Each structure stands twice: as C-alpha cells, then as structure tokens.
Length: 369
Image (cartoon, rainbow, N blue to C red; front, top):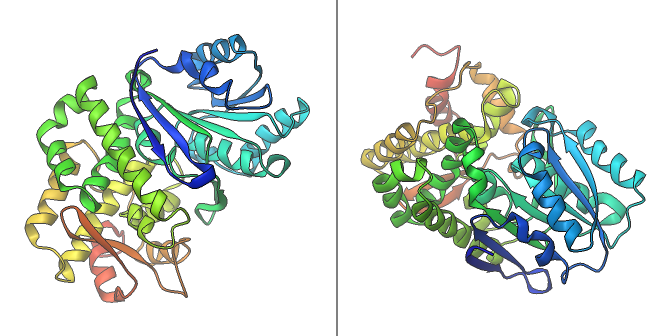
C-alpha cells in the first residue's frame, strides 16, 4: 500500500481522512470495510473514467466483501443536471439500495458533486466516499462537502453540504488526465496561493514545469498543501458563512463565464483563471493591491497555459445578469473575493457598477476596447 500522506478534516463526529498517495486505488475496499456497516456500494463514475479505473476499484471492493452496482454517467459539465442525477437514483433504487449502503464517486468534480448530492438525497442520506481522479477534484471539489448540480440559469444553484466518509486521492490517475483538464485544475491550485499562502504561489512560479510534467515529488507536496489549506478553512467554516467564502476567488466572474458560454465550453478551472485575473484587476482599481501583484497573477496564469479570455465574448449586460443570479449574492448585493496582497484576501459587497463595467469591458462583446 503506497501512501504518502494522510490528513484529517476535523468536523467533530463527521471528521474524515484525506489519503494522498500513488497507486492506492486498490486499497479502497480494505479501507472501507471497517468503516461501513452495509455491504452495498453504488460506484458512480463516467464513460471516460470507467474504462480506466472501474475494474481496479470494483475488484478491490468485491475482494473486501462488497456488492457493487456500477453507474456510468455521460462525461461533461453539461450533464451535471437533474436528468443525469436521476440515472444514479434509478440504478440504485432498482438495485434495492439500503441506507447502510454507500456511494463511491470515482471521477472528477462533476462526478463527485453529483454522486455526493445523490448520497445526501437518496433515502434521506447514505454514506459516500470521494475518489477524485482529476487535479481540480483532488485539490478542491472532493474536500469540504459541497455537492450539487447546475441549473440552466446558474452553476451549482441546487445542492447540499454533505461530508464524505473518506477521500482517497491516487496521484497516478493524473497521468491519464488530458492536458487541458490538468491545466484547469492548476487554476484552483493558484487560487490557494493568492488567498492564503504566498509561499505556495512562489513555489508554483519556481516549479511550474516539473509540476506540469507530473513530477511525483513536486505534485505530492503541492496537492498535500492545497488539501491542508482546504481542510483548515472548512474546519473553521463548514457552511461558508465566513472565511470559507475566500475559496470563491474568481468564482463569481468565472461562473458567469461558464454559464453564458454553455457548460463545458470553458472548463471550470479555465473560467476561474479568468475570474482571478478580473478579481486582481478589481482589487487594483480599489487601491487594495499594486500593479505588480496584478501582473504576477496574470503571468502565472498565462504561463500555466490557461486562457486569458473566453472563446466567445458575451454582452456586458449578460455578464452582470448572470452574476446577479450567483448563489453568493446576499441581500441583492454581489459579493466578490478580492486579494489584499499575495496570500491574503477579503470579501467585499460594495463594488460599484462603474468599476465592475471597467473590469468586464475586455471580456464583453459590446464594449469597444
């Protein structure tokens, strides 16, 4: 059993371990056997991941005495909806799933979010486990208990906070990840550096190439650091009433880009990368940071191979309308996470229309740049 690090997310009686290692998929069954009372497992994955890793996971679970129902979903953000969610319910209800059974999410953020929401809802709640296979899911979405689906009018507007029993990250799965998906995950890594840890940001600047080459030593340290930060933040603020909101850097802008382009046209990490550049610009306009920080953020995002602009720009009013529907709006006010320096950020709700229009102008189709 090749394990590099094990972390704990402290949430009282809902605490759980985050295991980070290489070639650890085959250990899943042995890890779950003492944790679960039931022996039914609903293994939720997608049509891309299933041919790569489902057999290994199923064998591990069956050798530990579990009975596995495999649920294979279509792949892509555009399928993160009610119709696809019901495929999980149909399969597990059809298999006479019981409350002591557990759902295992094997895949990226879409699979994890939907499987987690299914677990929160099925039979009014069954245990679930995250086995993330993308960088974005490993450093961000698999940890912290946010689950849900998209709505045509906005991203992640329907969902629940529901914590897993275990998060098992096999870094070896990243070797089969398409480069575009790897780069999208890197955006969330960069985010942690901007909001929380300047040393991490500097490490990314210095070691970007070996990280992109999946050098195990660099990769393990970076993923571990991101998970430490995420666990620390979630332990302080599970339901995002305070400090956890900082994890949304770039997301108010990014969710609007994703929604307007059509889910999947711009990957979540790509949209967040653009959103972080917008947030840095907004902070500069407010006198919160200097131009050097804005340039530093943009330089790393561009070096990481992330797009600076959407493939198709949208009208300014469309961006404003989409952001106004974001779930982070409070009392009718849009809330933005803005850096105050490298490794520090705050949430603001007093952004003026003029400054917002100025930041959005380069991304708008109807503004002369």
